[in-house]
Image (cartoon, rainbow, N blue to C red; front, side):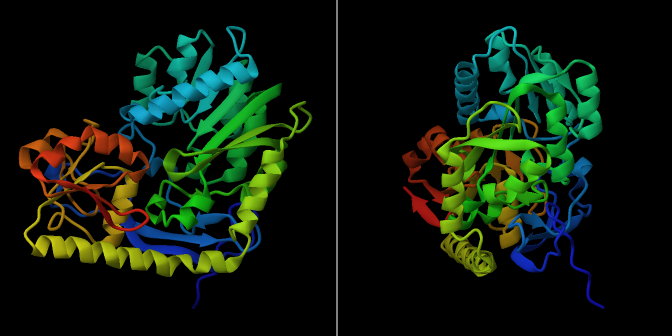
Length: 413
């Protein structure tokens, strides 16, 4: 008996069309302690589908948010210097654009370790963070940033508003894709917004994912893969109006959406219509754009497997940099384990000494590269490749070369 089609989490229409089926995969940030190396892991379907009615790309099966965001969450935003620079620039831009000062109030949803709010705090602008992961919330509080350890939805937003927490600027960077219930999340936002408040949301742009074969950004933590086309009805249903758009280079190409309450005075710029037209011209409102993605993804997988196997057959040693979620998707989808890649290095101490989920490749500190001198260093978080290649430029001293797998496998000497 066939399984009934799942409903789209944005519009409710039946999902029939596959976008990217990556098979079964472990939770991307479920690192394995060495003492548990002999134990099994849970693998879950990782299959993105597209809604042919509203064009939202989404995982067919949603894992529980608590599997990802908890007291042992391993992603700390402050370990990327380029991301810190991005956060600082945002704070300076918003402070000037919205004339924020000590009488203003800022709230960040999914504030992580205070990586961004610290700059508002340093500028004397009152701020509050909302963060469900206990360890990152604790790190933010250690910085002196008021951080509430909770998931943001209608009931918690209503409780915050009842406590007087209404803000001039509400922001969420790379959180919208992490939300199982878009309407519950976006619908909660007006409760904490003052009448003239501005909302900004940043997220990787689906247009770039499709154009640049960024299939490794698909993982269980990301329930949705977002375009402005798919989001406009979601915002409208929540009583929000999109009034401006910025295109960013972060995470392989992102959008920053500016929204406000319907009656707020912010004028709508031409960038909104221009972005919608760009998405239409790129094929994001045509089904064939999505249904052709899977074979291109499989071709990239085969090419990476061939390159790495040939290198090993030639006696080359291979390490990787970046125990990031996108790297875990790539390694597990391509079936690459510790027999191919000796180890992966990462600057985050919370990941060091553990094993990657699924592939079981050991995670070490970056100094390991200079101790073992591999022939190739595969850069897994390609979105910060310039930062990482500059940091590890010393590999060239012994003839080491960088490998990148996005949008295709290539060597950087």
